[in-house]
Length: 192
Image 1 (cartoon, one colour):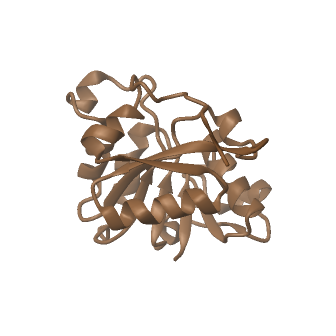
Image 2 (cartoon, rainbow, N blue to C red; image 1 turned 90 degrees about the horizontal axis):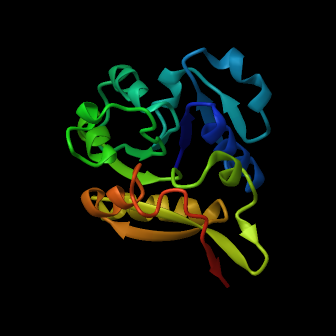
C-alpha cells in the first residue's frame, strides 16, 4: 500500500510527522511544488509533485476544501483509489455544500474513488501531538461508504497510533465529524 498527502499546511504537516514517527513512507505534495516541501523531508517523507502523489493507493486530502476541484482536475484515474477527506469547511459557503455532508460533495469530485472522512476532527495542534496519552490513545473517527476502504483507513489510523472508531457511511458518520457536527473538535481518549 502506498500513501500520499496533498497539502502541507498544519494538518498535512502533522500527518507527515506521524508517518515519520511510525516509519511509514509517504509522499507529500502541494500546489507550490516539491522544492517548497524540503523542510518536511525525512527518511520516510518525500516531497513529490502532485502528479506523483496522485499515483498512491491512499491519498490524504489536507488542502483547503475549495482546492479539491484543482486536485480532481489533475487526474482522471480515480477508480479504486482511496481518498481520505481530512479537509474542513471553515468559511465555505453553504451553497457550495448544497445541504450535503462535505464528504459527499468531495466524493462527487472524485468519480470512482472511495472517499473516507477522517483525520479532520482534531485541531491541528492536537493532531500533531503523539496520539498516545497516558494509558490511552487519542480517538480518530472514520466514516465512509465502502467497507474495504473504511477498513484500510481504520488500519492506517491504528498504525499511526490513534484509536480508530468507525462511524458508518458518509451521509451519517461523515456528517457527525464534518463542520457543525457534534464530534468535530472532540479530543477523546480510548483507554487501554
